[in-house]
Length: 84
Image (cartoon, rainbow, N blue to C red; front, side, top):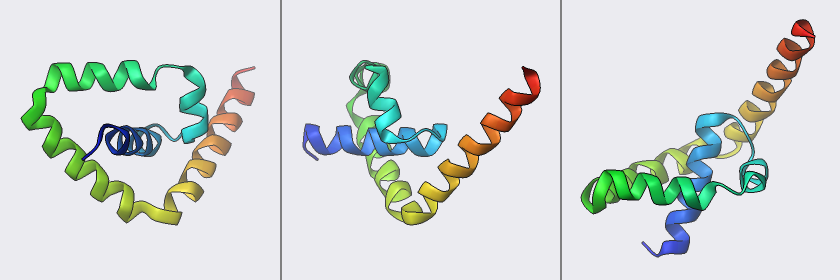
């Protein structure tokens, strides 16, 4: 897998895990830093397994992921409004 493909998978998988969109995560400016940290700590063998598994998750989630992220953001806003 090329470095750019790994980054795309890392970003998409991160979006799945956090409920934030890829654009929102890119906006933090931390994607490359976190990806480098994961790769440094996990090592090449574990990273190969991670990227293969993450790619499968991202492919399987498809259109459902966008609706799930939208629901998560909506819920997060409602919770935030209660606390204000």
